[in-house]
Image (cartoon, rainbow, N blue to C red; front, top):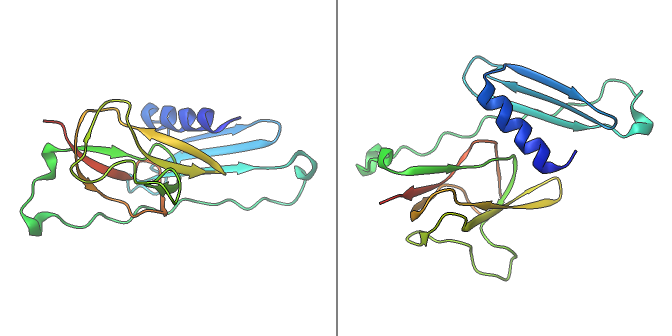
Amino acid sequence: MDIKEIQNLIKFVAKSGATEVKLEMDDVKITIRTGALGSGQETTIVQQIPVAQAAAPAPVTVQAEAPAAPPKEADKGEDDSKYITIKSPIIGTFYRKPSPDKPSFVEVGDTIGQGDVLCVIEAMKLFNDIESEVSGKIVKILVDDSSPVEFDQPLFLVDPS
């Protein structure tokens, strides 16, 4: 099972309203829980078990922590409701640049179009380009470079006008 299939499965479960889905294949065991803590937060557990060790004692599961609350904007008097929030489609490490010696994909104030690459998220040693699904102007970048991000965590605010 590749990363794209896992991402699509997570999106499907999140939209379906199911509270828990378990999937076991030859060398992969995936459990996806949504709203498991009753707080509306989503928890995703992805676990790979090598075939030779499948009979080992109970494997360790890693649970994603809830994302930190974004800073309050009320102090600045800004109304973020008019902006579109671009969220992380996967769990991983957020990078603003394609490599350390290259410039950032986007900066605050840049105009973006649909399909433009905004950042890269590394998940399980795979680098995934995150493309914009909207056109507009980058108003705010909500995550620091090289920071861990959670599924559905806000990454960018975009002014669609």
